[in-house]
Image (cartoon, helix red, strand yellow):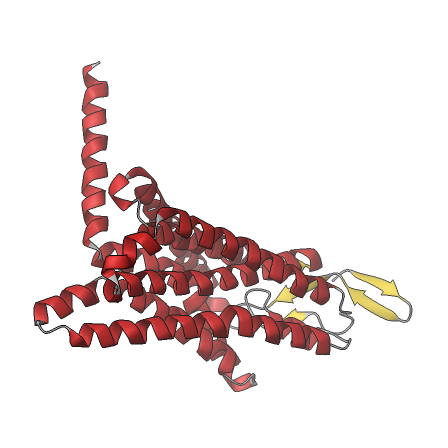
Amino acid sequence: MFNTETGNQTMISEFILTGFATLPELQTLLSLFFLVIYFATVAGNLLIILLVIADHNLHTPMYFFLGNLSCLETCYSSIILPKMLANLFTGQQSISFTGCMVQFYLFGSCVCIETYLLAAMSYDRYLAICRPLHYASIMHGKIGVQIMIVVWIGSFLANCLTISLLSQLSFCGPNVINHYFCDLIPLEKLSCSDTTLVQLVTFLLTVIFTVTPFLLTLISYICIIVTILKISSAVGRQKAFSTCSSHLIVVCLFYGTLIIVYILPDTPSLRDLNKVFSIFYTVLTPLINPLIYSLRNQEVHKALRRVRCKMVHFARMQANI
């Protein structure tokens, strides 16, 4: 550990991410497991992005939001997994102070983006099911782009405030983070300075970027469920529900694991369980999301077939030249 002296305090310049050091016999297996997950996650989400770009039938607000979600999931994995894999393969568990701050900033920004992105997707489904006659006039392409620009820029700017306050804290004691990435609560616990202001700001940002979009998503789905229950035919109810079932599963996975991780008390007995649930929303959810949308979405199936036919046709043309 490298230290720098400041007055009579020793300021640390790197942190130790313990990760899965308590399971030394499984290091090789975990390395291969997370490596496969990373490649599968990036490949699956890039496929969704390319489909949305390449197929004109997917140039709708719903699939524009889906493309943004896949882009976000790729970012999630690339923020967390490469460093985790490097630590697993090399056995070195250190991360520089700057690297830790950057990782937390990018991770926090992605969480803020995803909460409002899921809210926007739920509002899109609300309009499609509850107000179908007004859908085209309200949720057009331009409004979708405007929403995402505001969400991406707003999230990155908001997290600038958090990271600027966090980076000004003094870290002069232990530098061991019992986690596989730099998260807010472990960093606050390691600080030897007053964290009241940081906690106040993060509480306000949590209300703005987590509680508010969660309530918006919840209200949208309450309205959707009420509308679906009013449909007289079973076929009509099933068809209406199928248009939002994939997104509902993604919402439940994201908020379910997020709530469990940050509500579980930080006790030694539950710390390993906290890591397991953290893996769900930082590692497994980005992998599962493209699978949910590709397996349950007929439009994605049709787009895959159309793109495949175009590729086969192009290959035959090239072969005949």
